[in-house]
Image (cartoon, rainbow, N blue to C red):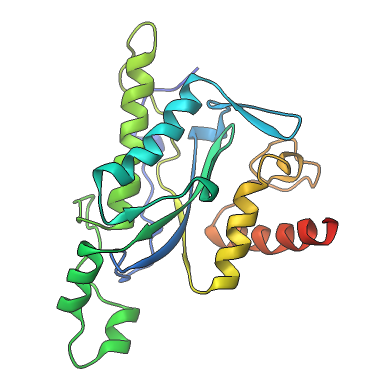
Length: 226
């Protein structure tokens, strides 16, 4: 059963990287989990993810993001919906990122690229083209569509863990490993930290670094096995 929203329980401070300009052109690895990591989107069967109706909605809404935002690029081999979470790579390019870059780049380019402060969400206020705003809109769209599709037309049900995880992809090696990890996530469901009965007996990730560590470990294992 999906629980109603309780502000006393679900409030949590932002885990975004303080001061980073999340509208900058580039690739971002994001992970979002269901509330209490409940299995809402289907099951893994013989190493393949079989989506239920809610899972199909979560998948479809992901790619609608790029249809609605021309500065966002999304690719089939860089996204997966799992029973209780999703992994994806968001590319920001084009008008929004370029315009923001021009505004920020004055005489101190290196410093401003590392820590510009203007385009960061504050108190939930949307910032056009930012990763927090894009992910927030995606999760809201999925929640609305899943609730609307419910036989009783339920409202206010909580689908998601309040925040999400993100990692700025900094080079081609990282990009290749993260793509590999995403594509092979269903095959490795028994090893996945987000699987409560994973055979590694590991707890769910607490921070994005845990996912990044798994990317490194799992891609080494997968490549060694092939």
